[in-house]
Image 1: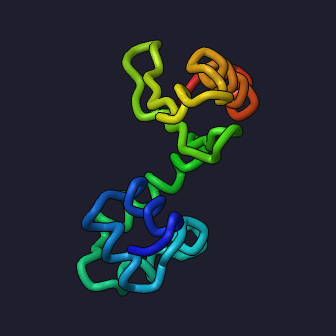
Image 2 (image 1 turned 120 degrees about the vertical axis):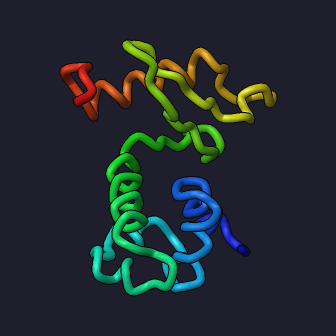
Length: 121
């Protein structure tokens, strides 16, 4: 891997599936998003179940936010009951960067725009 876009693919889809997609020429998330299931299943090692997993992960892509300060990933990675857990941008401790509380408030604001009712289906 040699680029940030390829790293994004592996981070979202995992090592095995990410590497298979990159080898097949799907080097960024936009290319994967534009592919249909037939395109994905033509890749050796990607079957119906893997294609479904890729589709699910791409549908969840709207839950991946970028830190407005540095471009780093701020990812919602799980829900436990009514609580949402976050992986906050690791650069928040650097001088001049938003604090963890500011980043969390920004994520909540983005979520309200995506899901105005506040409910996750």
